[in-house]
Image 1 (cartoon, helix red, strand yellow):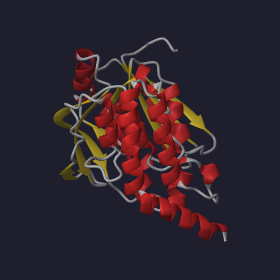
Image 2 (tube, rainbow, N blue to C red):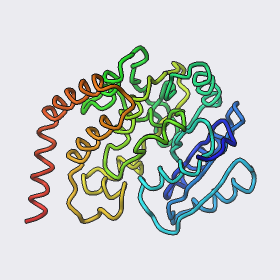
Image 3 (cartoon, rainbow, N blue to C red):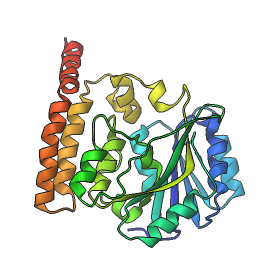
Image 4 (cartoon, one colour):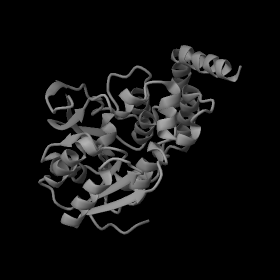
Length: 296
């Protein structure tokens, strides 16, 4: 395990993010909480991303910039930037989102104040490509959930009442290291949230301190299809048969088995997965039908 050098490590994985990258970095450097490192992993960008990162790294010693010469996929990049981290707490940052100045200060205070909290997030606002506010996002609302099976259930729902932007909250690094991290398949961020929920509760700060940008070049908008989305996570899957819902089902079962919870709690999680399978039956069937169509 790496020695703790900072209270917070912020990992920013990026690929061709030049249009919004400067704004994201500025919002991080403008935090009122100062004891952090910013780790930028450039996944073979072909636009001006490298130039922007080199300029910022030269101006602020808290920034480390690493670059891969080829695009190894979003899954590799998200996990790679965490492997570089040395902080007690860790936060993923997207190249196109913004954090308000007190984001880190308030999240660190929450985690310092309660050792049971695994992940701290704040109120979220959707913004458009120009930064204009659109609407406040509905949060997870699992503050009072004492049972790990309840957290697992609500965090892994097929039709959740929340988004997955909570993955960009502040997480205890020692707990995150015990998880499977971001998998090389669609919706693996939701699976990771469910796995983190087995370790302990999340905490929401009501203030809207996180702005999530919606634009045509975002990963979801630019990769709407099953094959495109899987290839975004793992380029080697391009042109191969992919069954994302079957894969997610299998991984959810595995995280229950390896989770730090008692067998009675695990049993309740497994029982929930029976309902998950039933509710996902059409998606699972479409996976198989799509695979047969591609094969023949």
